[in-house]
Length: 403
Ligand SMILES: Nc1ncnc2c1ncn2[C@@H]1O[C@H](COP(=O)(O)OP(=O)(O)O)[C@@H](O)[C@H]1O
Ligand SMILES: [Mg+2]
Image 1 (tube, rainbow, N blue to C red):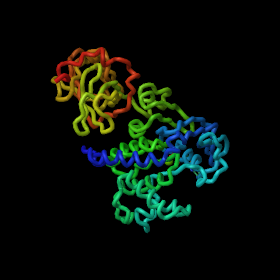
Image 2 (cartoon, helix red, strand yellow):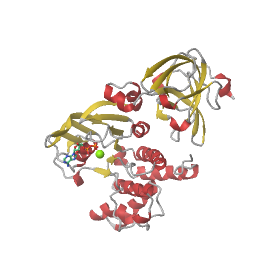
Image 3 (cartoon, protein in one colour):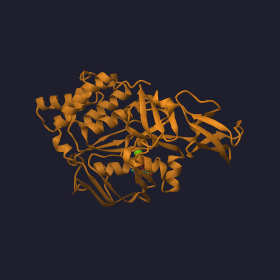
């Protein structure tokens, strides 16, 4: 799939625009937007929806609140924004308690799932709305709205009515509107849910890019674990108003600390590796166990990443498949009701789990198999090289990858 938002040409201009935009935001670049949540508590009648949670969010961090529907994500966001009262605890932004401040005094803006745009106003007026209400001069409003629209790549759409915009464009207008007054913190409540899957996946990268360029704190609420995985610096897993686990995506994925987290995130195979080659949005990766393909638009050649693939998405054949060099031996089968979990040991001793429907023809234990998958099924995450030391130096890259 082609990334329609970041073709190389647009990207160069975009970088420049973002640099310009950031230059005007020096005060924000000085790391504002740290949030301290202390013993925060909330009940609706008998329903205790947020249970004494505490959490420190760093300035400039992309943090996701992840959890099933009804676990209190929106309520927490609304308490940070000031739309909901709190029953106990404190919320501090850059060291100052904000719980007694009305929403407009909190230096925080929100992007909602449903765009909440004014349908009778055009794009420009929607984005300008907040600044007009604050009596900012016309010239300044024009400057700021132009910059914000450039950042979300909607320059040229100023006069367009909201009703004439697609879902993805509407969501970008609401993002432009939310960043136009340069908040140190942006709260996003399932902002991509209304979009179709293809656009949702593209917007993830776009949001992450915008956050990185602005350097402001994003608190992102979602029930979609893959979304949280690919965008966040850290994830907060919530369950029934309690924090189950806080950690980097890879930690949450690889070391779930409770049965709930492991259930909610699901079993996965994860590989540390390096991007060897990128062609379009397809990357060839090198890891200790071999080579394979993954789909990503976020990473470049030579970057260290962590790749996850679910057991039911791993396929096997007797012959090697193009783009994949993962050879293993079937070691064991574990039968769990209607599924069979195969354990395949790769040449370096690493085990991969593969889930199959019981009753399918299965290779015999001891048989050699070659693993592959649809690159679209992978989840590719950031992985600082330090995480796995000098693995790449000690690795035999093999003939295939040297070509
Ligand atoms: N204004 C309200 N009045 C009563 N109950 C509410 C209100 N808002 C949310 N709730 C309840 O609080 C719980 C958490 O809701 P919410 O924060 O919206 O969850 P999430 O965003 O994780 O889906 C749910 O049980 C919901 O029904
Ligand atoms: Mg919600």
